[in-house]
Each structure stands twice: as structure tokens, then as C-alpha cells.
Length: 357
Image 1 (cartoon, rainbow, N blue to C red):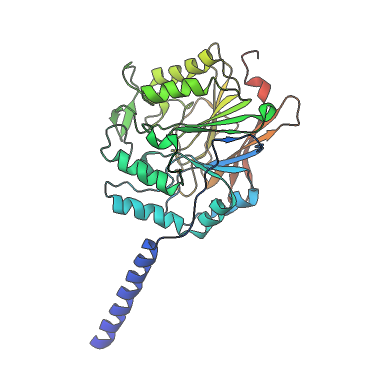
Image 2: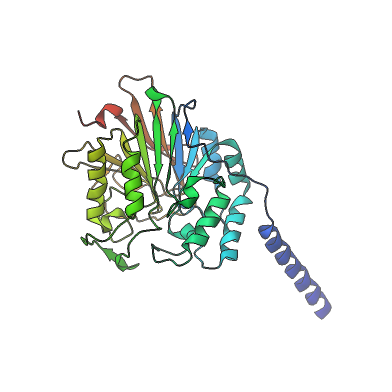
């Protein structure tokens, strides 16, 4: 009987060891980002999502593939590393790479990515995180950033992409809300807004870069921000913790007279569409998709939420559909669940996103 127990224990230990070694095995999957300028590619279906744990099954990625977008954007918390150990960090990425549903997605579509706190390295971390440069190297390695890319030399992972000819030009601006973000007021138990003019979400270099990007010609501009831009303050991480930085974003858009701007965000483990109406600016929309695997059932109050009476707390992905043939051009903001059901379908006209409106 004792011999049997030892034999059984040995078998269990062998299986556990084998599973661990398989999880550490380097996979051959290659993530391919698009070129920074793609004039021959017209975008009409843009899918995105965030907050997927690398150890959880991710059936929503199969739903994305069924939906068949032109491109997929990872908006942050793409793995949950939460570590200063780069070996553990690398393993988190490897566990994602080993998932068949992830392989199927990245082999089928160009992938754009930014990070949020959990794939940056620590919960709610900002500029103070001491391992951010090592984390940035791992990020670029995993997401296939070319060796000579200017993005690798920036103070963060921010970048931009362009798609389509002049009449169908889509600009995708990818922000970094972590690398230079000032410390927040409060703690994870609840943050309070700060009107300190010295606090920053992006850092001086990224703000200057963004101002220049918004001067470039485009019909539609998607700004990807890992934390919500247009929600009301709720004590969680969001741009609402730095109201002056929200106003700086709106003023940067005004100064550039940039039309066609809206935001895509993640972080909160649910989905919603927010709309704000700043003075001397057209409406600002923020479509939040945060539920590849992680779901928050309760959500938070948001006076700016539209399209649904409460947040959408199911596994989902977000989508922006563009009908270029419509006059004026039509845009649909969508949230789609695992079964392919549209939990949100909110249409707007591109003409609404104009200073002449």
C-alpha cells in the first residue's frame, strides 16, 4: 500500500512537472503588427479588447475570429504578470502564446497593442515602477515590434498607425498611460481627484508627440488609452483622477482642430460607452471594452454612460464599424459577447465629430 502511494505520488509529481515544462516551452507563434503607414488598407471593422488572464481559457478570441475584423487592438492588461521578476514576466507572455485561441487570432490579423498596469508590472503603477524599461523590452519582444522601430527609443510604448487613402484615412493613436504617469492621490482602496498642475498622465514628450500626431491628416482618429477617458470619477483608476489632464487632452484636440476623434479604453473589467460634451468641442465618445476573461459584476456609477442603463458585465470584445459608403460616413460602436450577440450597438455619424457641427 505504501509502495502504491509512493508510485501514485511520483506519477502526480511527474505530471505536474511536465505541465510546468510545457508552459515554459517557447512557442513558435509570431505576432505581426501592421506597418505604421498602410495606404492601401481601408479599415471598416476594427475589433479590440483588454483584460485577459494568460492562465484562463479565452473563448472570446474565437468569437473575434468569427466576426472577422480587419485588425485587432489589445488595449492593455493583455497578461497579468504583476511581478518584478522578469523570468515570471516572460512566462506570463509564454502562457498566452501557448493558447490555441490566441495563436489563431494573431495568425489571422494584424495586431496592435498597448499595456496597462498588469502587463506593465504592478497594480496601478506609474512612472515610479523601477523595472519599466525591462518590462518595455519584453513587451516589444512579445508584440513583434521591429528592431529598428522609433517606438523602441521612446519613453514608453506610445505609437501611431495610418490606414487607407486620403478619402478613407484612419489614424490609430496608441497612448501609454503608465510609463510617465504621476503618482495618484489615495490608494487602491480609493483614489481622489488631483488638480495639481504638475501631475501628468502622459509626460511632456508624449504630450508633444500627441499634439503633432493630431496635426496629421485623417478622416477618423481612434485614440487608444488603457484607462477610461470619459467616465465620471469613481475612485478607480481613470483619467478622472487628473481632471486637468482631461482638459489638456480636449484642448490639444481643439488646438489641432483635429476632427473625427474618439477613444477606445479598457481596464475596468466591463464594457460601456461614455459621452462627454466639452465646451467649444464636438462630443467626445469613449468605448470601453474590458472583458476578455476578467469580469466585474457590479461596475461603477457613470453619469456619462449612454446606450445602456448599466455596464455590460459579460465576456466580450469591442468593435468600431465604419460605413464609408454612407453619406455622411456612418460609425457604429459595438460590444459583442462570446455568442456573437451585440450587447451594444450605438450608431453615430462622422459629421457629428466635427467643429462645424
